[in-house]
Amino acid sequence: MFDGLVPAEVIEAYDRLLATDGCAKDQAEAFFGDARLVQALTERGMAHIQPHSPADPAWLRPASPDLALQGVLAGQQHRLARDQELLLDGSRRLADAQARFGPGMNGSFPEHLVSVVNDRAEISELSASLINTARRDWMTLENLYTEMPLTEDFAQPPLPASGGQVRCRSIYDASAMNDPVARRIIRTCAEAGEQARLLPAVPMKMKLADHTTAMLPLTPAGTAGALVVRAPVIIAALREYFEMLWERATPLNPQRPAPPADRLTRAQQAVLELMAEGLHDDAIARRAGISTTTVRRHIAAIMDRLNVTSRFAAGAAAQRRGWIG
Image (tube, rainbow, N blue to C red):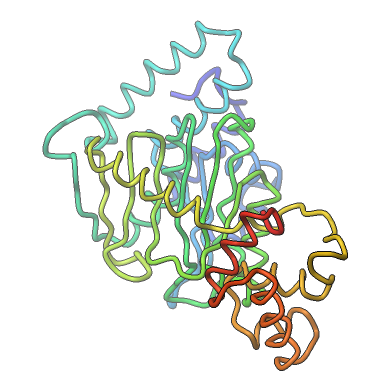
């Protein structure tokens, strides 16, 4: 299926990984004998890191052939658009792969408009591989709630193969910024090209690819049960819901000029920006390196300057005035 689309050594590495259903992440370099092959597989979406569990270490796991091929084709489409014949040939291979390996994704409607997945391994693979199917938009809601302590294996930045052609947006629960590991995960994704915003509370996880597929959790962490939705009317509603939250959310590290003296002091501006991340007074104090009493005094001054009576109203008023992005 992959002949002519990726180098032969990458195909061989994928075949080895598929035959063994993966290997421990820390043994991957020894398994292949070349660390570059691990990077080549993950960058193309042919493999992904499955985070550790109570019983197992972090694992380098192959994507199923149909999802792996979708990831490869996405990269080829953006890098090799001039070679239409190769892309059409790959699309024919993808159709064959979907018929053989993906009965839930080959248009067998209506029974697959909505499906429940309760196998943990299948949920993990779908969660990591769904981004391969996005061609224009990839949207996620993420509260970083997990059954295990967070590690950086949980990061899922945009694939380099997308070439920046897929708009990747994520809305994170602002409280995650208080956790050093969660903060690094969010920064890693943002540095890879993801547009990230923060909300005081993200009610659930969600992954949404284009106008085609959504994945929703049936448990808080989403690892024991998930809903896979392909019904167009539901997808449209979920996209609208995401856009409503996106408008309310605060950009991560928006670029803002220093405030003029007739608006807020630098200390007040710093507190305002941390307020916009949804942090409580004690957390703002820790991040700003000042006392909680001083934070509250700055907040009172900000609200007085904006002529509002609540923190939420202060954030909205400051955004309207361009004090925050």
